[in-house]
Amino acid sequence: MIGVLRVLRAGPWALRLRAVTIALLAGGLIGAVAAPQSALANDKYAAFVIDAQNGKVLFSRYADSRRYPASLTKIMTIYLLFEDMEAGKITKNTPLKASSNAAGQAPSKIGIKAGETITVDQAIRALVTKSANDVAVVVAENLNGSVSSFANRMTRTAHSIGMRQTKFLNPHGLPNSGQSTTARDMSKLAIQTMRRFPKYYYYFQTRSFKWKGRTYGNHNKLLGRVAGVDGLKTGYIRASGFNLVSSMRRDGRHIVGVVMGGRSGATRDAHMRELLETHIRHASRGGTMMFANAPLPRSRPEDPSLPVSMTSAQTMPVPKIVVPSTSVPGTLVAVNQSGTASGLSNARAGIPIPTPAPTAVAVAATQTEMGSASPPPSRGGWIIQVGAFNSEQLAIDALNRAKSRAPSLLSAATAFTETTSKNGTTLWRARFAGFDQSGASGACAQLKRQSFGCFPARH
Image (tube, rainbow, N blue to C red; front, top):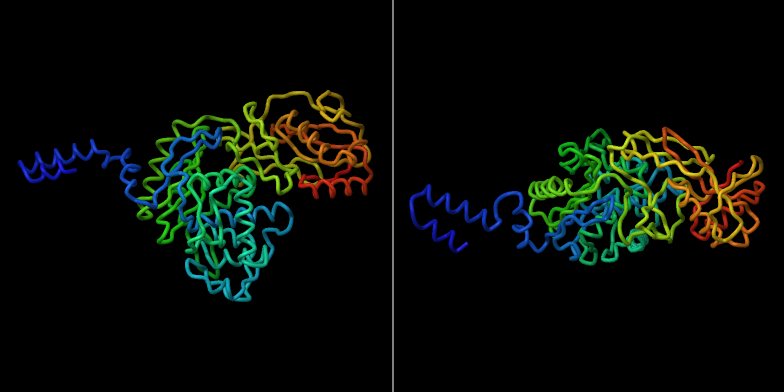
């Protein structure tokens, strides 16, 4: 830079301008490749880009340095709403009542008043678009009784999904010196949200939200403007700078980017766009969504209704939900409480599921480690289902895990898998037969107490 200043003081203007430009380019201060270097002087800055389909790190700057999450905090608040919806504790239409504490939160807010109610569906949209701090407290108090209790749950959940450097003390991200995270941890939260709750992820694509006649637009300016960007969330407080977590799917590839500490919303967005456009070309095509060292949390039940998959290189005991690229045709298939498959439209789910290669249609065994093939039991009586998977082996693994957790309960039951198909997608249901109605209900109740997903059904 000293050399640049010397050039400025000497020579004709055209020569000086040309020399300055060359010097700046050589120094990495102009152009797309320069953004990370120019951000190094900003002690709030951090950035991270990961291939969501194989866990490969594509870009990393200060990814493990502590930063203030600001409103990125609300991704976890929404995650816990999804969790309670998935567990059947609340529905989209459940009313949430505002307290005076919630109504008194600092902006950004929608101005909900004490005593008023907002539905779960409205609350999620208010958090995604307006990033409403008052609504975040409404959620916290209704789900867990108090902000402190909800914040403790947020931190426990964060640690259970591998966000070990994260601590939450409130549900909205307003200034608190004890609340911190890292760019890497926020990518884990984004990926975990997409793979655990694919049928709810469409909320992060919400462009606007109406409340009391007023329309609030989404603060995420890349959504709908950059091809392939499908969510997630912005954040800002003075202590954090401008933050953004983004997901991009393009040409069969899927990456997640995190930028923290931007000096303005515009420069943050420009840097994120640059990172996504640069690194999407180096991401893998197809495959399963995965994140190294971040299995689904064991502290909560495995969800028996979601299809899951695992690559041969991944040996975690808990399989991962398939969330492949949008270039693969098909629809997301969930197994409902009756045991039948139901499709979710691509437009709503935003995440199609590929058709796996066909294999054997059923297995059964009486040993602790199952794997021998035999037909499923004849129809009649009641069964329990502990999962629906994208491969036969994963279904067998689930049966083994269930049996190991409740050997006395399942020792006399017949373990088997059974296929179902919807819109070209094949799933293997992991089931145990040999129950009457009360026995099936009791078996599921016991398995759920041991954090294993289960539901009974007539066979």
